[in-house]
Length: 397
Ligand SMILES: Nc1nc2c(ncn2[C@@H]2O[C@H](COP(=O)(O)OP(=O)(O)OP(=O)(O)O)[C@@H](O)[C@H]2O)c(=O)[nH]1
Ligand SMILES: [Mg+2]
Image 1 (cartoon, protein in one colour):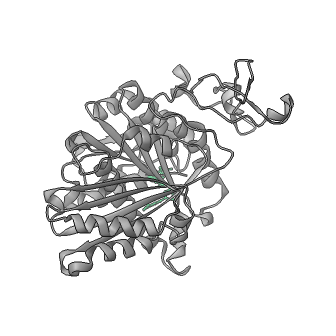
Image 2 (tube, protein in one colour; image 1 turned 180 degrees about the vertical axis):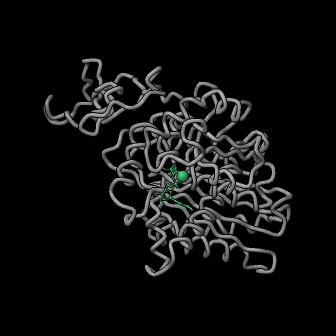
């Protein structure tokens, strides 16, 4: 995959700021950066030229944002499907970055993803979840957008709680400082993921393996990024690794040691030596358990000259979660039956029919009909996470 065809889209205020941060990194020069917001000032903070920006719902929202209203974000983006499709068409992969909890990103991202799906563009979502002190409404909106829409359409989702920042920041740290740190970490991770997924790298992660790890709905992610430079001399790999371990969105070394899966990615200039690769990955192995699933990638590019960046996305699975099947369309989750005891001894597996949520069709761009916190346009069996079986329990041998 050519890097020029890898598109990173920032959605909403936080997403646009991540794009602004990426623009200042020379290593992001070859990636196509675009931004979409309902707020004109958000797009300005991306620093992108007008032809790379989409001001959704301009006539109706007046370029002032959605003020935390998810329904407005949904409608504004729903009415801009053609523009969204034009922005992403021709991409070989799309990474969408945002902070969930407000109106624009929580409502708009599912629309962007459904357009990507229609155009057969694989999508990866990299989002932060609101700080606890932002209140329950923002948290609920973020979780609802993730669980009810984003996880069902995206090929891979990395969602990190902003609260992890407090593992390294004192509680008296100004909020602006915390957000600046988050922007930098998310931008660096977006860069690492784009390198990880571009072909032609030294070690290249297989997208279906990547997607299988990150498609599970109830996984918790955290991420660490460390950078070292030529001036650090022979200890470059160790310094990058140590910085990654202290990274604000990682949540400490225990996030690695307790992870079920970790995606490691090493980026460097043409001078990257075999010894550097060995040194950094052997350190990584020391901090993971033998049973941890590891996906690794190492790549070099001229624009990384003199720099070494090591990043980790640590994933902890929810034990109750379905076992994901790799690949687009997912061909349906397959869930170990929790009802096995109905058939005696718990020695029963219940096959699930491959039903996937694809889209709400014409309901996608309309205001949600919500009752008791449930979106009634979504079929009940999806809302309730029901496993639809073929009526044929299979006995385990
Ligand atoms: N990384 C980062 N996160 C931010 C920043 N500002 C806000 N956030 C987080 O992102 C969440 C969503 O905020 P915004 O991006 O402003 O929301 P939006 O998607 O633009 O939606 P509306 O403003 O309601 O239209 C917040 O709840 C915060 O947790 C920022 O400057 N950087
Ligand atoms: Mg906003």
